Length: 163
Image (cartoon, rainbow, N blue to C red; front, side):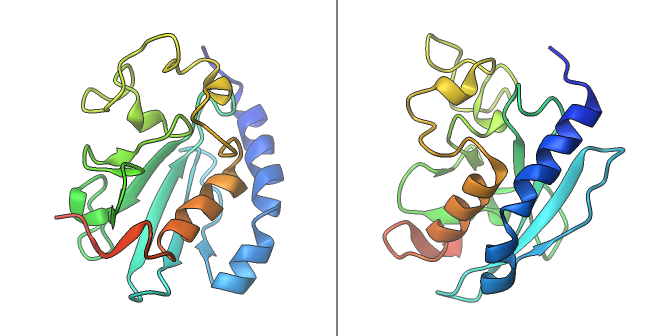
């Protein structure tokens, strides 16, 4: 399955506009879109411990396939290490490491061998928005808001990075 890059780009631009309120209110830093790599980054700071998290978002084949959501260690620049990820109180920030939600392509074993979910009747890349556990995380703005709200709430965030 392949989505024309211009379709993915237009969809991302449309959804990022809905992030403006959060960008201003919570000082998110969203980079310019890197159209050749179909990627951008979002920097968020937890109000609980002032820890800064950098999320790389790769939008190839979006919205047919979920986004590739990858945290980047702000100290080393390494992508996908446990230390790049927030330490959560549930499985959302999964120790694989990945964001464990149907909205994250990295949580699917068929994309990422260390992903926690094998393909079955629910965990399919195609049709990911219909997965019962995706909840409201079907757009970039809702995904980014959910990540920020998790690093802003003691019920979901342990005020440290994964180890």
